[in-house]
Amino acid sequence: MNSKKVLVVEDEMIIALLIERMVGNLGHEVVAKVASGEEAVSVAMDKEPDLILMDIRLKGEMDGIEAMLKIREKKNIPVIYISGNTDMVYQEKIKQTGYIDFLSKPITLSDLDRSFKLAS
Image 1 (spheres, rainbow, N blue to C red):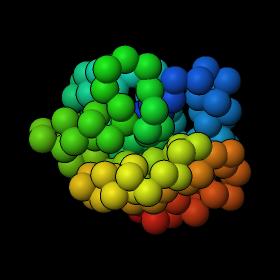
Image 2: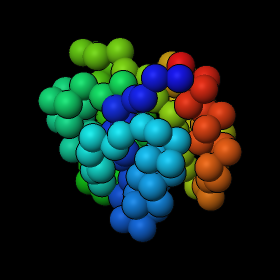
Image 3: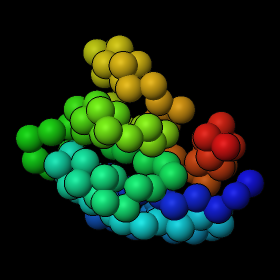
Image 4: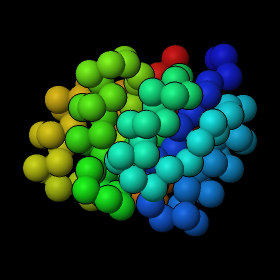
């Protein structure tokens, strides 16, 4: 599997750092960590990552699903959602974004590895 440039979108700093470490352990590079949907859209346009790891509930006005819909208007970047919220309303909304996988927090290295393989 080729090394991927990854954008981590997570508003809880400790979780973002854990995800960054897992991504590194899997041989990939985190190009940025951001905490809001607005930042996610901006950084995705600027850095053009190979993959986005996206939380659904974020700081700011825009949630992760809205951010992905905005990103999809201009770029076709694959997304893996990582969220503690498994609410069916969110499950229906994320289908609109053509996501690769949905991981429920807390995630493990093997969960992330499996999702990365789906994204290859």
